[in-house]
Length: 396
Image 1 (cartoon, rainbow, N blue to C red):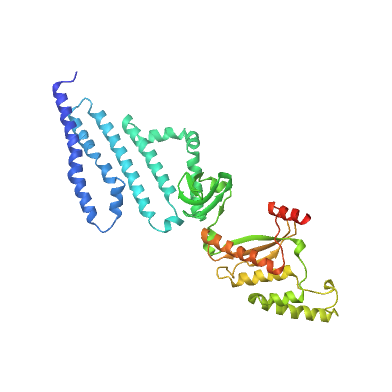
Image 2: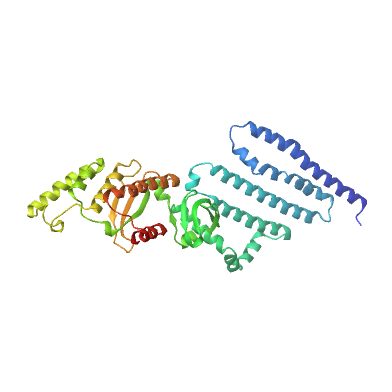
């Protein structure tokens, strides 16, 4: 059993250690908090929020125990080594919290979305934790750090295996930042990982993507270098979002226009200049080739309902205020198929926001599908119940 004197000394040091924590919290830290709130800068506030001061508190009892260990000469060296190791551990935690606070401050600035440093901060933390662990072990076993590090050299292969993902991710993070591949807030697609949404976090080991259905996909950072992915940032920065959709025309409804139909279509304001210019052009061509109006339409050049409708689509889209005229602008026919003749609209909307883009696209096709009957064209679709009912009624 321990002598009464030693027990009393042990109790005294324990009480003194507790008092050191209480005094530090009650007076020193509270005074620092009060002073920090009065300062104009918010950097010190961030340090407080991340618990830097609260962690430093635990150095106070360590100092009491360290200097009180002299009262126990038989075990003093061992106590001092344990306390020193404990102090190293607390300092590592303080460094960790300071780095987290620095990251938090950096992420307040817009540049953090283009140049994230979270991966680098994590690498620095890993470095300090590894070096701190080595120092703690050295202090506990009373050996030089160089002896430990020389022994670690023999374990290089094992360390490379253990830290394989960390090394790959670190290199990938450098390439991502250097080549400006991804920012926080970018919309990316990686179908092989089920990712289709916005990047919400770019860290050392993982990239988190919030998909449009609000699920979260986590992708290893180095996979962004190994595999291909689509980044929609270019679309957002260009200010135009592609509309690429076809109207399937029933090919049996395609024909030449009669004069009466041309006159009727001239009542459409945006189409009149095209019809008048086209009539002059066709008249001159047919006259130059000796083709009269009474000849078969196939002998010369004539206006068709599909060509006129295509011209109407071009005129309508040019008048549309939310279509970019400085980007690719096409209304084209695609190769005919068993489903009809595809008439493709290939333009860019001036609004890239998803809901607004969909509204613009729907508005365009609402109008064109409604206007197509003016040209005596039919939209192709597979027979449905209503179509079969009409056919049955006619055959009766």
